[in-house]
Image 1 (cartoon, rainbow, N blue to C red):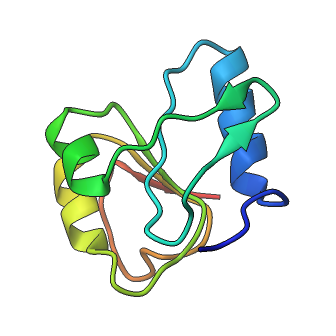
Image 2 (image 1 turned 180 degrees about the horizontal axis):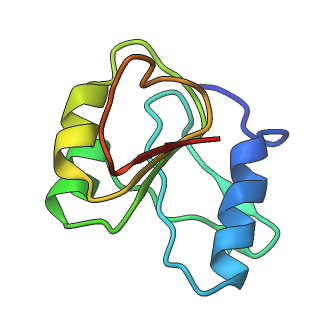
Length: 95
């Protein structure tokens, strides 16, 4: 499994949490994710999308992730890795 200790995704998660967001993570290559506030709950991507998340934040571009499904099912998508290059949707924001 991958080592996420130096991942910028953890900083993003921490910033969202301190602003009141409920944060879960989905990454098939990372067994555990922890911010300064403790362990983050893991939720497989399909389950997160089915649960009605408010926003999907892409902080790592993995081959094999169905990003078209993410765009279709998430009401807001923030793409920090250009995983959605070529996708033109009003609810997709790129950083």
